[in-house]
Amino acid sequence: MTDPHRILDTSETARPVGMLRPVLWLLLVVSAVLNMVTSSIDVNVFVGIGFGLVALACAAALIVHHYRYRR
Image (cartoon, rainbow, N blue to C red; front, side, top):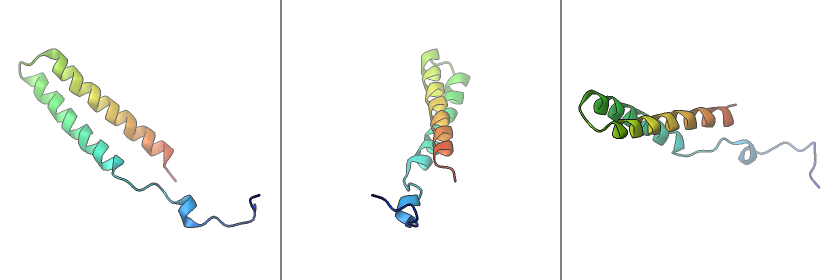
């Protein structure tokens, strides 16, 4: 049985440390730039749509990560 008066140690309240957030930011920037480049040159439309969807997914994942692990 757990003690309700026990103070939580830092391992239970620590934020998750990892490389997810920087990787998502990098993917967002790269996919957004590639989306702009493929939109300005004459490339198949589906390539640009693919980069746009990747950028949208990275932005959504960053928003979810922010709200899940905020203080």
